[in-house]
Image (tube, rainbow, N blue to C red; front, side, top):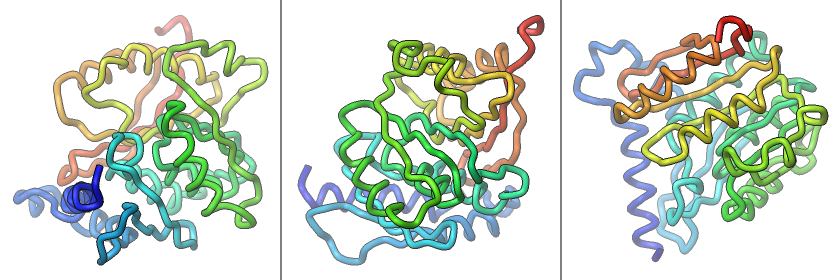
Length: 250
């Protein structure tokens, strides 16, 4: 994809971030959405590489993007999740916690969790790991208590082989915008189910688009107790917290 097309994609993404719908006065989320979006800084010049800069956890975070993949662009749900982690350190203390991010994409959420003190494993499909590793390294080296790791994770595939429960036990699973119009929603649910222990907390930011997203939430609720933490109507984004249901209630 050429630089002009990449820049156009960047502009479209950021217009979505900065312009809530015309009913925003009725939604009541204008102030907090504006605060979240102030954390994003876009380059003013077109370059051969699409990038954005963000301010979270007391650091300036520079993210390199690639618009030839959904997984290599920073989507609004990631900013919502990062803002929540930064501003709720007592409710969700990341220090020394074992954390996995699924569908990490560019790595922004993993970077923020690492800067907040977590042991992070950042996962995505093999083809986006190069850019993910680059972003994590440039933004966390010599800045974090624990160096984040990058690992391939194909939803629903070889989960016990690649993430055996005896070795991988997580305090938190982080996910931003992993539910959208793709054919792997069943595999995603299997992945949540495998990675989540009884004491694991899922923090999940989701942008609602189509009926398939609502259907996924209904299936998700059969396995997990789902609690809405925050709602951003002008972005169509909801932030959830989830815990595994007792087996007899599933």
